[in-house]
Length: 401
Image (tube, one colour):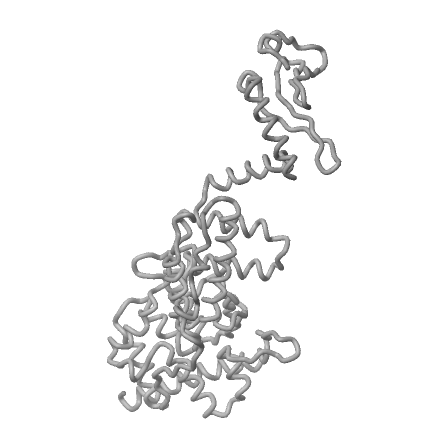
């Protein structure tokens, strides 16, 4: 066993050399005069070396205690070198243990096991529905009510399947945090989904389907005196007839005006698959009107208080009420029923209409959704639909409605 005097008196030589302390522990003296405690050991049939610290920061008694702890770990079947590396990783992660930081670390760690599409879905789900609400908060402080609020917000826009997937995804992140000592429990396990989310059901939304009344509604929208962003959203809604949540969460990056397409990512869709909305000439013209105002930001229809968030979920319905339409006459979701009813009455293919409404059933062979199914027919349908709405608007003007 080395004495402190022997260690102090150890002088550097031309080459590094070792002073044995016993049990595999030794002090390595470098040509520059540095002195490092190291433990030589065998684990899983391989010889390994564990650095225990520099002298005089780590003196003999401390080095021997660390060596004894390492030997006990070996006896317990734990590689001390691997544990030291894992401890450094835990310390690094703990340096920023916000939910978002932990989630992004988790995605990086599991990335090799995920397809690019799945990884993109996870990120879109988190960035759209989770990070804005609890991303900056320490993961250790989050509890079931925080996650429940997010799930109910998602369910509120009709995306019940997305709410369930978000619950599962957040649970995996919390369990990663538990495993790395960043939080004590996974609050998703405290949530019984059937107690907080309604069962899937068919909901009927108030809608205007009489052609003359539709024309009057379109004229009322044109004359809306509220905010410019809300008026543009109202004008676009009947042309694209997407779900209200899909409209207000629309992001500029999803649009390709040259190709006349709006591609909604799978994570935003109720059915969990990408959806294409062919854009009519009228839709493109409307988007170009608002582009100078919001095109530099993320959302096409940002909120009034913060452009970092989309407009509130009640904006379109509130505008309809302001225009004199009660909740029993017309709703934001009613534009979908309007389009479905009138397009069927006009004789368009049921399959094409349903696919454009994103009601398409899973292919029985592939068990997947074909987001490009009937795309040429849908392009034609969307332009003819826009032209038809223009006709109804003109009729309304003629009749003084």
